[in-house]
Image 1 (cartoon, chains in turn purple, blue):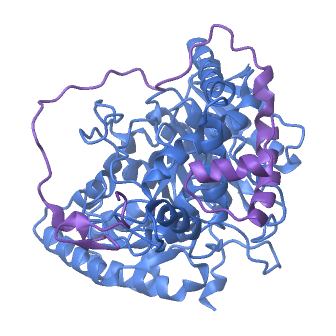
Image 2 (tube, helix red, strand yellow):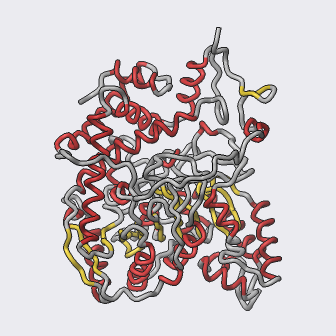
Image 3 (cartoon, rainbow over the protein chains, first blue to last red):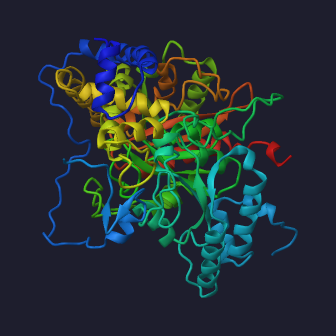
Length: 95
Length: 499
């Protein structure tokens, strides 16, 4: 399988990364090199093989359903590029 | 200070030697830290540190001196270390060497670094790495490449220290930190360790907490140390390992006494030599080094057995589906809203797209796009689901070898020695990926792997051997690596950077 420039632009939009036409053309070649490299997996016999979900056999631990952190907006907002009144600021989302 | 020892000499001590010297009161933690701060200043051409923290270092050293005076020394009391810039350090800028994190100052401490401070270690600064740990040469860092302290004999061409933990490896090799933390997703501890003549161990998945470490590929990422010798690596891992309720994939198993495993007999251990690792393109020097390693372990009483890991050739393609897929998901959080860089736009999607285009470097953008593609509707089964099945087969290869009685597997760490900075700039991304051909399988199978220096190339550059262990078989790896170290010796670069 390979991608064309149109697909590169579509994927870039899905990934929310602005990509211009010129960069898309370059990425097309790079992504196809990588896709060509991983192509050999299509020939591996995986019939009846379970996909890996965890490399170490373990079950998740349970804990009490209690609040352990939160309610402290100041340190969280400290690194925000824009904030006001305890909220993150973004361009208008809802009309 | 005792005898004729100078401040500079203190940096020649290993972490274990320095810790012992501090307990004996041969010198103070302040003196040791000052010696390192001076050495760091003289080594700035290496670009190993992206942030030096001298004030914090001095304060931590002073606190260590108080403990030492009270006779309350902890295992790493007063030992100055560097931290890869992927670990969040409370109140100390953490960037993953990416523009997108800008001047992010974490309000919390990663579990692993917190454990190191609890063991008495002193923070010298944050170390250079590939952006978001994506690279094998430290050349994708937003701060520019770290430079290896090693040069070819009679040749001043700057070489890569490997990656992604390139700053960590360069700092330890150049003796501007007694030891360092690293992270390893596909070889990022072991490959730079091999290229710089240092020891690096990636423990079993789950041995160290990932909490507070900037995530790349969560099912593969593990923290581990880069150190000057096997004893120091054991000492560091002892402090770093352990269960953490804040990382649900961290394993609740007791941490063994790793330093005690260094020097233990390896007689009777069965060492597997995988036929599939004898690649056609393997450098003859590396092949000869591997044979020497086999001979050393045989001389020490190990039983050498030929084994087969038939799916080995599928490891890199599997990795380059799974790692970018997880990265594309993990890196979705960098949106220009909550921290780091923000490029303004009229609408929210424009803000995301412009911020991420400006903040991520070329390799990171490439991997996010590949990851997004292989996870997208219509391609998920062909790529991602299939790769996860092949991952099961890769792990099964090792399971069968271990079930047949193999205690550890010996391979080269890298297919070749360090290369020149910029020399692969025009190559396909795939060529750079081949650096990790011997290391990625270990991450995919979740196993522990250690790289130990085993010799120098004809050009005078370090080469390493890798030992792969059973799950939670780190002690066996320390014993075996020490056997190789005892036979091969230790390797230190000539300090040309001091001018």
